[in-house]
Image (cartoon, rainbow, N blue to C red; front, side, top):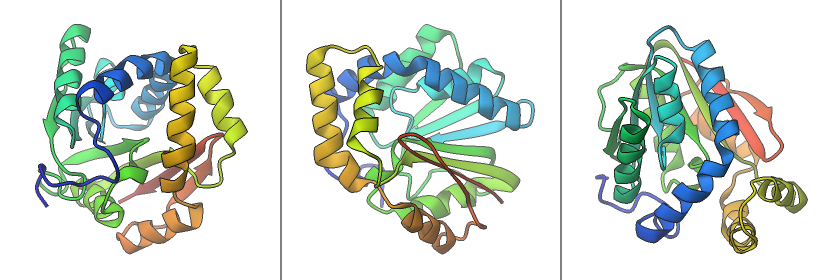
Length: 219
């Protein structure tokens, strides 16, 4: 499957929708900064990091600020353009490029850390994407998958959205997207465990978060 093939479920994040996501995601920067700090503390100094589906690129940029060598691959042309612009504005060097999570345009064993956040539920070929994450990791490398879980409560999502500080219209739109699409696409934790094993990962350590989960594994 090429980067231009439909590699995602539902409507693609292009054009005005991607630009809206860029604006609203900025409201969650404290969470993104905290995650970047955690990853930087775990990764080797100047480690090569790959972010899959970076969207507007905020996490990748925060990782670069912490001295990591970052490459990021997204299926959305608009997101790649936005992320490149955001990196320039931040004064950070990040390699953002177009690509498919299920067929990464990278050599095997070429990175030390892989992270995929808030996108896995939308992949058309999730097991292939997990296998690709493992393929590009070097020996001893770490992969981190973060996403929603199927059993998250609507009340917990409402608390999250309310705390973002976005407008009433944006809160309504976000809750509509969560309830009508995103929760339905999210996987139960048992399914995440099954897919990681099928993709060749060693047993993943899965930690529950208020909205979802973090799945950690090493190669």
